[in-house]
Length: 349
Image 1 (cartoon, rainbow, N blue to C red):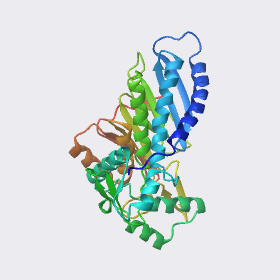
Image 2: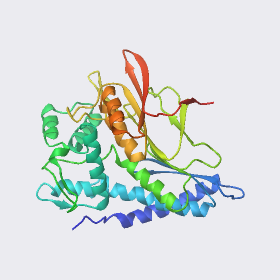
Image 3: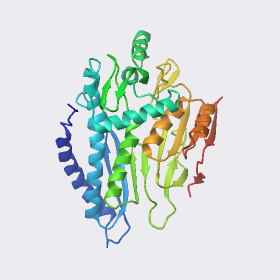
């Protein structure tokens, strides 16, 4: 039997509350006479991170209903992919799929297969089977203590997509005991894409969905060339002053600016190297623009792990529109480079 999303009914109650708050916020933004193409905005929290909407529509009531449905898409992803909840689909999968093949939902199968494709195309730099390692490093950040070498070795021994058996025809998964899945490098982008698709289905193509920095971008705002997306600097203390103008794409940034731990003088990023099981130790930030937010999210994670030369080879061989901006610290200096059709970076006025 395919996992049933038993917690989904609870989500509707939460969205009702969010919607009430949304109506208040939307009304404030849209005060005055409503006209076609008016700008509405709503901010809330989902999947443990900020969720921001900017939508152009005809009325606050229509936009509110559309955002309500879009939020449900994000919450549905959380029910499936959360590795913080023992009731999520991937948590229950980890508890049972080592004994026999276990049926999985359509959504989990889709994201697993897409993750497997990216894993192969990036020579293993993107890997969703590092969940046991992720939990060790979360504990390390809490305790300010590097994981035990034996624990790292044990967690690394059960990781690797080659150990995961995905049967697309039967829609089942089987994996070794101890393996846990971690979709943190793709699922926020995927959820943002679903939210944007939901808004498009409701006739609101000019929209922007930002889920914890993974951004799904629709048609440009009325009368504009695109959406202005800020480029975060490598150093958190430096104010944001640059942006790019884009539309109909996804944007994501990965790096150690926000999430890291410093142990015995060494800085470890939350981004793990699948080969070593260690957090990355170089100061770098990668911003990726791709066809959608899931792709941008995953490739920002993978490009953080890959050497720059390998990233450039990937872009040449894949023949797609993915592009990147790499900011890194080298011998005490900040250096940046671009690859692919990355748009012109403009200075904030």
